[in-house]
Image (tube, rainbow, N blue to C red; front, side):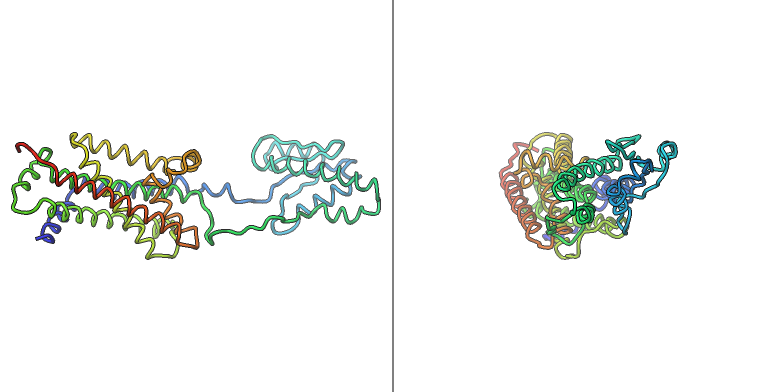
Length: 378
């Protein structure tokens, strides 16, 4: 009887086009828009050699230290600058044509001329400031021993790496992925519509179908369990289709631990369905208000997990650290990001464990409420 009820509810859910749109098609459409909007977002993080000009005046010819330092910055595969040597008029023309980020005018003091305030201009200014500070230190040292000129010039173009970078994961950190993982969290929470629908389907005061089921010679909890399992099945399939679209079509990485990714999908879907069922069970308001409450809750949680503005996630966690464990969307998105970025599965397992605990608590409340509901008349 249980599996018969399950198959009936499963077929009925597949025919619900409106629910399928919001739980399956809408996340796919949103992911497509994300891919178009974020296509070139990481290009600003890629460093390229900065074109600059240097005015070859008398001060430049008389400053071997500056010439040597500039030559060092313009050599190698990862050269900082690509330098044009020209007169002042030529440098102005290049700057006006935006062929260079700025130019240096040697003298006392060394002058930086730019026409904007971007990252490249800032790097040029920082270089000039660093050179002036280094030259002042060198002049102070040479005042005591002039024989140190050559070793000082050799050391001027070098920087010691005093901090060792020890990454906690082998994957490249990518802030754009936060948007996609937050989208997955939103899609999981949208699975709450299935849970809400199945709870309403056994509430005779809200559904004529539930009124008929209430007089059927079948325990209410058995009907509800079959319906809830059907809802969870539809949600898991929808999430797998979303993950397949993200990975195979859009090329979004999830890491290589396929089994853990499937487990994260299961726990996220379970949490989403339980949230919807909880809202449907504890509230005696109308169906439309319950739906509005679920939408509002899902969007607030998704917003705080970085769906619209990624920095919001870090700002809220910094202001109130427990929110990373209380916000369902944070738990889901962090589980996926941890699987991608960290070599150890510990963090993702903690997040999935918390999802299971929260789901169990919500389902426990749902069962208690459903069992105690009584109606004077139908």
